Amino acid sequence: MNSTNTLFPLPSTHFLSQPRPSGIASPSSSNSSNSNRVVVDTTTLAAHDFDVDPRTGFMPPHPPIARLGGVGGENGKYGMYEAWEGILDEACAGAFRLGRDIGTETGGREERWRGRVRELPILSITPLLDSEPHLRRAHHVLAWILHFYIHTHESGTEEVRIPPPITLPLLRVSREMHLPPLLTYSDDVLYNWGLNPQNSSLRVLTSFTSTASESHFYLTSARIELIGVRALGLMQDSLDELFVGDDIARTRITGFLGELAGVVGEMEEELGRMYGGCDVAVFYDEIRPWFQGESEEKRWVFEGIEMDPELDSLEYPKELGGPSAGQSSLIHALDIFLGVEHQHHTSDTDPDSTFLSRMQLYMPRHHRNFLSHLREQSRRRSLRAAYNSAVTALKKFRDAHIVLVARYIIGPAARAKGNGEKDREALKGTGGTHLARFLKSVRDNTRDAVIQ
Image (tube, rainbow, N blue to C red; front, side, top):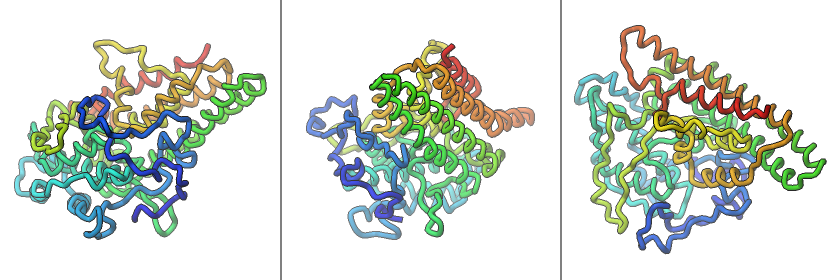
């Protein structure tokens, strides 16, 4: 599927219809070579400046690019990236095993594939710089290759060295997009879907296991994002009325908050449908381990950074947690709008207290800007009953998420421990947080936002 297929036609003023600047410097970069780079303006109220579509929310309004070089294409501007696409195709079709299942075996199909990764040419990302959708696809492809490469190493591997053909383009693309160089929620959910030609239903583009459970896992999150589009509209309507502030506005806001509670309830119902299509054992044993970021047991070493020919040298990545539902901009937006605070438990002994703020580093940069704008615009409501109804609905959604995590992760981990297995990472989220403690904390923080 190519980029011309659209779920909705994009107006000429839409963010994705605009030419992309030649590059975007890192906020921390002070190198003079970046001084003439243009940064997209996201300070206006227009939703498309934040890459938030009124019809699809944080999901793109058209199917993400499914292949950089076009289907089977070797020619044209992006033809050289077929080298990346082809190596990812091999991994997805290879039924690769996790390192823990490979044991100490050498010479297997996974190792032969990694050898081909090391032999890839080091490709320039310059042709991608004028297209945000193509940069998204590049980050998607390279990050999936990275996780296949790392997690197929034989058990006992304490350090994985990532070769320059992956290190250099991934770090360069990540710098342009202000994202960490590994899989994020946007790679797994927001930009990992297409349309089935038969019925236009959603399908998954990339998967580790090619199982129905893995597809259902990603698509459930995607459907929750689409349900949440109405929540974003109700937030905007409420803020518009709050600006007026008269009796009619207060009446309308009360109605909007009641509708918002209903939308969050629908999100909870969709979350509950996870059980019908994602097998617990398949998720815990076969899918979830692929998401893991860097850990004390397995360190990641990015090779070739010193080979970067660009004037401003690449920065070595510091944040390497895996994809997590905590990276959903929709859930953060609900927290901000409803005044749910997660910072007041911050302490030196509880690193998880800043987990949600760290997760914003994994979001597309325009969505981060949207959350900052929403935070500036939102105010605590005096319409107590309607406000509390919306907060209570969000708390119930988080209750449902705790039950889901207990079933898919905590329960299987406890059974594995009972069988004598040891897994220090089992009760940590893929973002590195202590799972049960963190989830209960954000649930309790939501409950505490209720106005007494």
